[in-house]
Image (cartoon, rainbow, N blue to C red; front, side):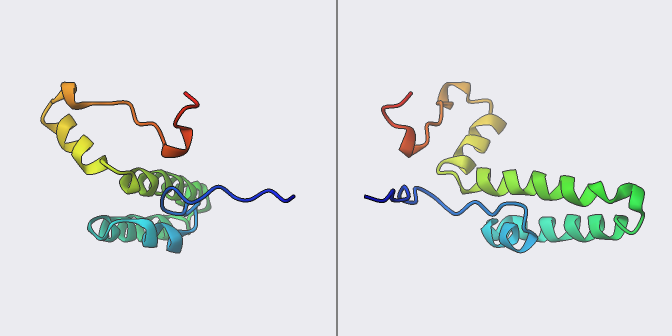
Length: 99
């Protein structure tokens, strides 16, 4: 008997690959990512600022994951409009019954 991978419950994690992050982002966020990424690459010519690229990729990696979650945009709007009563704790579908 061999182990089978869990079924995909959401989009693939893009890791810190800039092309994968770009592809995972909603179109409304892609221009900002590209602009910030190009600025970080330009700054990386100064070796003292090279880590800026890595930091940017980590941040956008996490953003891509967050933007892909069901209900993300609604949660942002609830927060912006201070509708605290609308917040619920998110539990990934594969965790059902475990927490």
